[in-house]
Length: 264
Image (cartoon, rainbow, N blue to C red; front, side, top):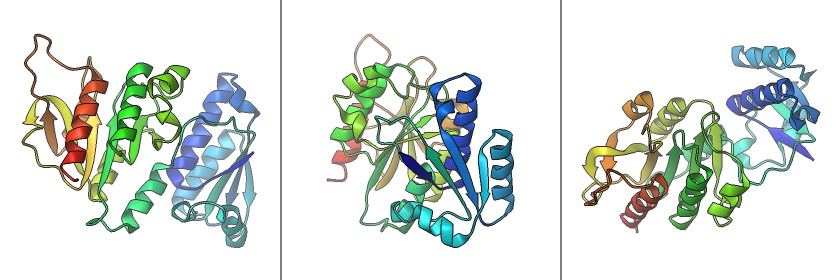
């Protein structure tokens, strides 16, 4: 199976994961990567250097060849900007992974007035049961994308599959290196960022933008400081029990229900 990847960030992430897997002697080292290069801008040069350091084959190509390589991709992913990565022998993924940059490109050309959107960001949610339950809620309440960090998160496991009741197979997921960067890019794309944490605005009375991002932190540490500072509004769920908080997956379900209902 041959996979074609476009987008600077997505290509860099794949090359980095290929290098990490090779160092750890994992199966991914059996993959064959080839970087096709046409233009030689600063970012492309950086990617070429990264590929060379990781032992990735590099082919000096042409725009015509690159256009042919991306012709079968969705239109939002066909903008190659002079560099394309192909991956042969990649293990089949169970989840519906999408390239974050490609998602942003799609958002930028959509009608932001008529098209409402919810994106969920999971910050350091390491329990696969919680991740699976959140994915199930995302499916039920129509979230368009779930974003998780490359590190300190539960990404793939059979536990997630079971806990999500199969939703992990079709809920779009992006795995990124830097959550703060991703949230800032979503802001530029017209999203309003809501962080779930204690002491925030009551979700019952909160107004939700048509394009909204919901940031959920870990149960122990909450949302990381820099990510929390990137939030436009902090929201909370009013409770009356003796415990100080809800399980993160339960809280995500409640908040997604409120966000979706305000726009129906």
